[in-house]
Length: 129
Ligand SMILES: [Zn+2]
Ligand SMILES: [Zn+2]
Ligand SMILES: [Zn+2]
Image 1 (cartoon, rainbow, N blue to C red):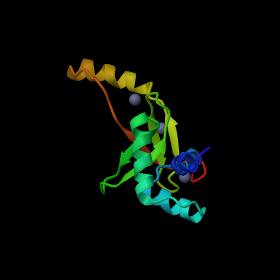
Image 2: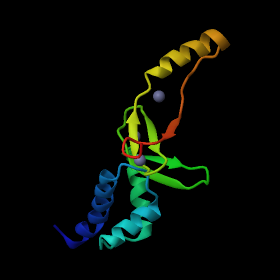
Image 3: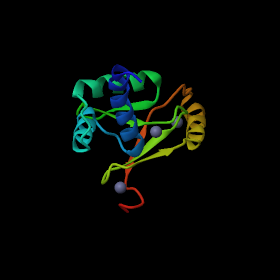
Image 4: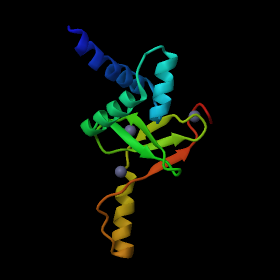
């Protein structure tokens, strides 16, 4: 392996591993700080570039909060939703079979045909009660 290849791939792996461990949304600045604490020398610009790469590949989900700040999480490609703990930030992936019923009543009650939906759930996880 050449020095150059190692230099290019290692930060990507460090970032991917970190995202694999985190079950919550983390910002680029959070990732940078965590890597720094773990003594990995990765520039903030590399974090941004890597996140963009992973997002383009469809490996991570980007979330924009009400303040307009972006954070990221490793996600499965299949359609699902996030139940986010407001205390610890832990995220559970949840499916949405119940939406089928809601879509049916939208159609019968309002004549509205649902083509898609996006939503997240906020509450408290098992450990936070
Ligand atoms: Zn997810
Ligand atoms: Zn929690
Ligand atoms: Zn859904």
